[in-house]
Figure 1 (tube, rainbow, N blue to C red):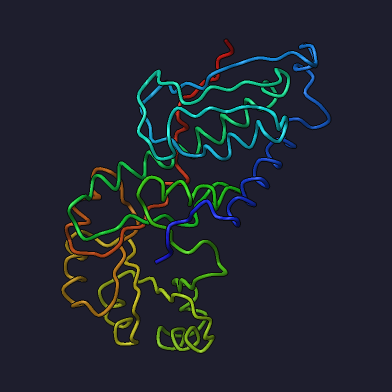
Figure 2 (figure 1 turned 135 degrees about the vertical axis):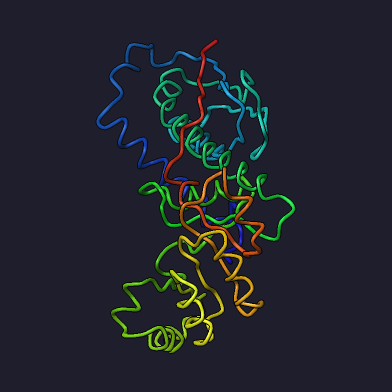
Length: 283
């Protein structure tokens, strides 16, 4: 299992890349509306949450303001990962008015999107509290926001699956078909000797037995019924780490966790999110 992403030097570099891309997309060859404001005018503003949420993405939001005006001051009233309530002030901002207005939309986009992922992840984590299972993300992320959203999952209390195709092997039905058999594809994966996790997806109890016979240590149970999940846990008898995936939502995730699986992966943490309602108000 991948460790939680932290705001280390690698992620800090990604943050600046994300923000530069967003600002370039939004500004193009210039913010025409901001030019209505005198160039030296100073201003202050606050970002306010309109709903309760887990706050995430503060570094991205602040970077939006700082890249346009390094002298902008951002005074956060909350910490990353805090639960906030409706109408709560998240931060106060002061600096060049033009720069603040130009950065506003991108800053809010990052903050509301990453907070949404962190918030829904926390709902799932809370739903399975007291069970042995962990909540994991998938590669079903928004384009160009892979690491940002996976970071947000960790802020919500979830864990990261592989970050991409380069740092883990997930053998699916088509890989098995192309290789000829479960045994053949498992042997090919091990022979690569890449030092990464090797996971195989199965769609039935019979396929599970075949994977176990091939000494698979990490198995994804795709769209298993609750009854078959319980049978899979019994058949496995602790030999492999079992991960449930497919058709999982907040109405059934606890029942799935109670079957005894080790992990539950949920694509909707990152692909089906509803942005948190935030606003920036000038004073």
